[in-house]
Image (cartoon, rainbow, N blue to C red; front, side):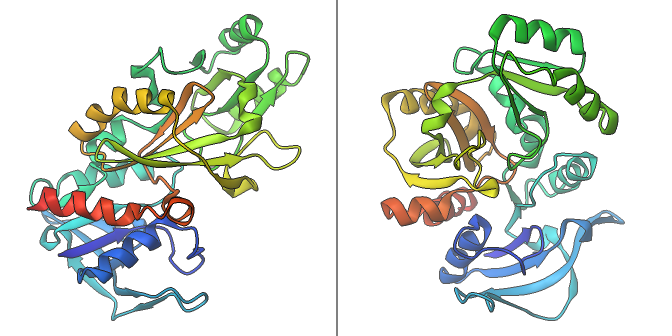
Length: 311
């Protein structure tokens, strides 16, 4: 197959942690032809969806992990698969790429399906499953947020479309900075905030469960660094081996059919204690950690699902 990766710059990635690199590596081992381009090189051009980028070869050598062919402009409609793999922020630039990539259907398979990536961002899709999530409010109005905090005490407050743990604050009931934080967030962004009841179980880890075509294939636990509330590996969280619980499987059984139906082939959900906190569809991670801990080749299972859909 001809495979295109729409992703952030490949040079700085950590080849021992980056899930997109692992997907490219497995695709190459299967004999697929790889192409790489940056999101800003995507275009609509007189009826075609094009991208300016490079043929790509990868290898697991730190500091020499990729080589590029001659730069060229390609018609993405001539590709079998296009991967939507750039990281958030989930802003209008990101949303515009989903509108353009959506136009490749049905001839080209875009993973994950861009229509539903746009309509099911991580912190909003969980609203379809209120009984699985912690108490939550999404609001820009400070009065609504204060009322929620009065009901639930300690809270987590974060940008609705953020990622990687950026801008996440734990506010105990005694903390007096809520109004100042609200002023800061609303001063530079028109986005609402998401506020959730604080779950003390996060001290034991924030579990990332990986689903492929709606089926769970395993989990890793992300433990916050000393003195941190956030468990994201971008901010020093530590990945550990963990087994899936009956509650994890119950959550997956509930959400899996919807993910499969909407073309969300590679998804990572976040579970703290017994609660589902996010459903990550934009650029989920965790494949390499899962493979190291359990020997599960998640990239291979993803390509099996893609090849089955293409067939």
